[in-house]
Amino acid sequence: MADLTSDFAGIKSPNPFWVASGPPSNTAHQAHRAFEAGWGGVVWKTIGDPIVNVASRYSALNLGPVRMAGFNNIELISDRSPETNFREIAEVKKRWPHHAVIASLMVDTRDHWHEFVRRSADAGADGIELNFGCPHGMCERGMGSAVGQNPEVAEIIVGWVMEAATIPVIVKLTPNITNVVHAARAARKAGANAISLINTINSITNVNLDTLVPEPFVAGRSSHGGYCGPAVKPIALNMVHSCAADPQVNLPISGIGGIGTWRDAAEFVALGASTLQVCTAIMHYGFRIVEDMADGLSAYLDSKGMRSLADLRGRAVDHVGDWKTLDLNYKRVARIDHEKCIGCNLCYIACEDGAHQCIDLVDSTPYGLGPGRVPGKPVPLVRESDCVGCNLCSIVCPVDGCITMTPVDSGKPPMTWEQYQGRLAAGTMHPLPAHP
Image 1 (cartoon, rainbow, N blue to C red):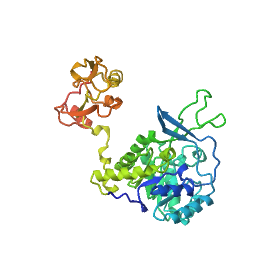
Image 2: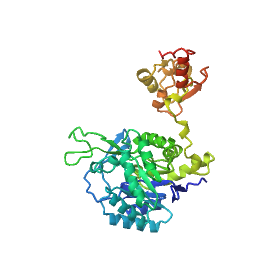
Image 3: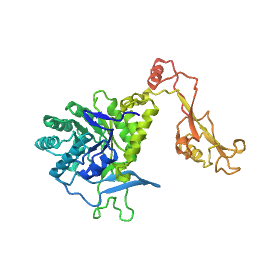
Image 4: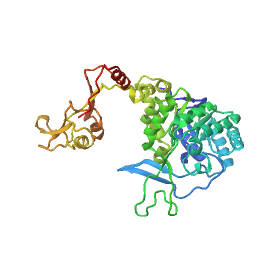
């Protein structure tokens, strides 16, 4: 069985699954429940000067029957006193000495940072996460994403923290920035031991069309909030890869953003993450989801002959590059398995109206009847000579395995955009024809 134990910047935990800083990590009670369920670590809800929250605090983007595909919050950092939080961190660490307990911090002045860093270590925390990502409320006070969006300021504050730190320091980065790599480089330059990303994305999920007030509703007004959940996973994967691929960052990465299954976790690890932080999925389904996540990830590693997370970590990083490095002569075409086709014709509609008009509706007689198909109703057929391999038909098809994207020989050698431009400049190639 694959080894899931984790050593992240010197912070050890029995597995890489950590409860992210947020509502599920607000109290010792929750931390105990998390560890009892099988989580490897807890990043405490951010500690700072106590604040006052509002009611209500959450809203969501639902897609058909899928609830909370995206989740928005305007909740701030812990509304409990630092004394209470540090006391409970000490209690949890004493009871769970082999699990990771991380103190998330957000304060303002140099002296405050020094004080809270020392108090975290005195409480027995294994590490400190600096919250440079909160996109609402705290940033309006010069903290949170107001720091993370400014690499120069982030570097100064990380420097303050490192002056007092005796335990590993993780910098949590905001996605509300043009290029997250600059903030990651600033963290590295100032001496941080690791980074975590992404924090939530600035958002408004919806507008109530009766009141014309966006949700969450607070006495007739609302505010932009932090967006998370499954919908942000592609953005998080992209930013994790950007940091993992940059040689000037070269720091361990804790991946955050839309993780809810072992598959999500494996993708983050393949793109360079060492630990996986989860918040929204816990708020939706509870702490017990970690059982399937850990079992699934371990089984996947076993199926690939991998003995530990280190064998998977970063394996996908080098497969991602700039568009100009892609092979212009590589060709794939869509092929439809008519025995699986249910006759919905979504592929035809999508291709005809939204793509490249290379699917025809033809007499179904030669193709027999797939499940649910009506006799005499035309079936979709791909004109492979005109198919550009865009994938749209296979994406919209509701039947797994009905449409496959199949590589075919283009009869041409591999050629990147850079090579094409070079040959054009040298006069050894005519411009490529545009698709009709």
